[in-house]
Amino acid sequence: MMDTVAGKQVSNGVNVEALLGARDALSKAPQAAKFTWRATCKWMHGTHSRTSVKGYYGLGQEQSHRTEFTFDMDHPEVFASEDNGATPVEMVLTGLAGCLTAGVAAVAQHRKIQLRSVKATLEGGMDIQGILGIDADVRNGFDGIKVHFEVDADATREEIEALVAQSQKRSAVYDILTNPTNVTVSVN
Amino acid sequence: MMDTVAGKQVSNGVNVEALLGARDALSKAPQAAKFTWRATCKWMHGTHSRTSVKGYYGLGQEQSHRTEFTFDMDHPEVFASEDNGATPVEMVLTGLAGCLTAGVAAVAQHRKIQLRSVKATLEGGMDIQGILGIDADVRNGFDGIKVHFEVDADATREEIEALVAQSQKRSAVYDILTNPTNVTVSVN
Image (tube, rainbow over all chains, first blue to last red; front, side, top):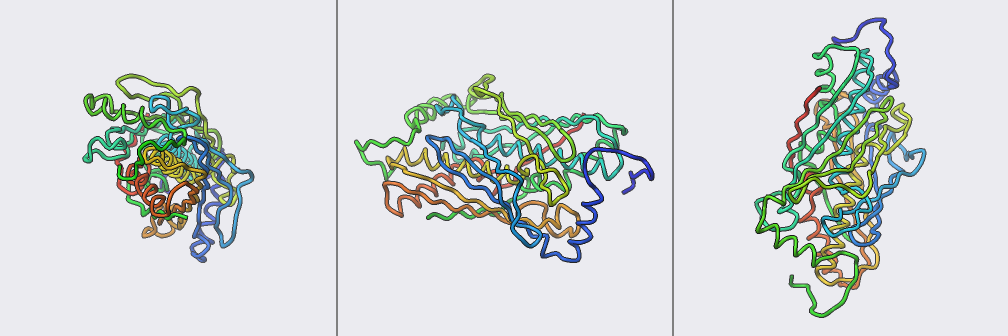
């Protein structure tokens, strides 16, 4: 890393040594790098559903989060729904926000840049003529996503820009959204 | 809809009449169909972030959810993190689950199929050699997503399969994941 300053102490709360150790270990045992992430969703009523996240597979064995995380999702009142949770597309923006932000913190730690604050504002445009089936030429999903970062850090503007660019380069969710992913759906 | 049975009463809790009304109204006023969904993320510590979802734009004006929804995200303990929330990639699976499940309920209501229960189980495979930068030929995101639905409904197997297929066809998140979406990132 060109930006590493030898001997400088920074504390962003990311254990970069452990990550570099994992990179070394997994490059010798690539099978352990195969992860499976899971979610289980139950329909509640109307467009309201509840999804649970707890177990996953990685490092060659079953793993578990410390607790189960549950998420309610629904459509809003303007779609004649009850608004019992965020919309599914807002959950996607949330995932992108969390992925890029964690990446900024990890890369900053690696480059010995002390962060003071990081805020990301995301918006995704969507023409709902797609999902309503009005116009087959309008896609169902976002017509684009804009992410804006405000980073306050002990670094130059160029270093901050490079930080965000590197996070983007290594982001799982950024890749999932910008490149096609195969989704297979089966029933019963 | 070929599957509509005249006069049959079903109650899945989706207001299909309002959605059909919206489709009529928006096909005459397409500008009102342009929505913008938003999320705001704050870095907490390490890889832990917190995202808020409340306001959005649609039907020609600012809109708001009834309450603000907040989501903590983090990396798990096997990544030397504190596991203060689901991972960002699990949030993406959650969004897909909620989108397809709401779609199943809406299409079932439209086709007058009474649902008893709907459960979706999702998994996304990921080789973390990508995000760790071990192998540039390994993508950062999912190498594929599998969704499995168990639907208990007053319908034949073929009708249930058609229900899920139609939900998939109109799903915003399914489209976002399976097709490329432009994401632009700016700083400060």
